[in-house]
Image (cartoon, rainbow, N blue to C red; front, side, top):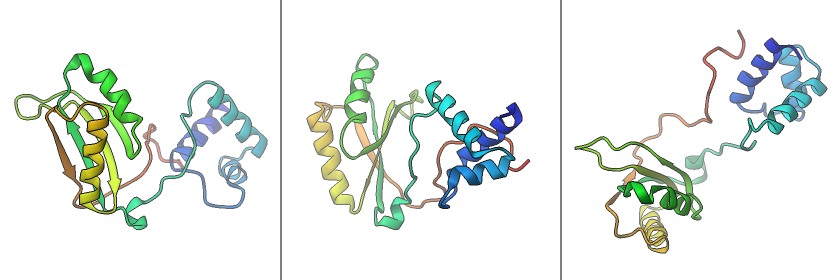
Length: 163
C-alpha cells in the first residue's frame, strides 16, 4: 500500500466502516488497493497502538436515551488521577476526562458523560456513582443536554476523504 493510499484509508476510517456486507473490500475499492492490503495496513496500525477499538457509534437518542448529562466536578488536583480512574470505570459513565479550570467562573476540572432515559434515573445513578467513589462531598453539577446538533466519532485529518 502506498503512503497516499494509507492516508486515504485513515481518512475513510475516521468516517466509520461502510455499512455493507464486506466493508474492507469496499474501502479497498475506494482507495484503489487490494482488500488484503487494507487488512494488512489495519493490522499494522493496530500493532502500533493506533486503534483503541473499532466499534459502533449508536445514536443514543434514537434508542430512547434522551436524559443525557455531563457531570462536572471540582476535584483537588492531587486527587484528579484517582477520581478520573474511579469514575471512568463506573458503569454508566461513557466518557471521563480532565480539563483545565477556567477560574473564576468555572471551577470544574473533571467531566463525565452519562446517558439515561429519564432525568430522575440519571440523577440517582450519578448520586450512586459519586457515593460509591467517595466523591459525593466534592462540588459538582449535572448539566443535562437540551438539544443534539451533532454526534460522531473523532476526526484527526483535515482533508476530505475523497480528495
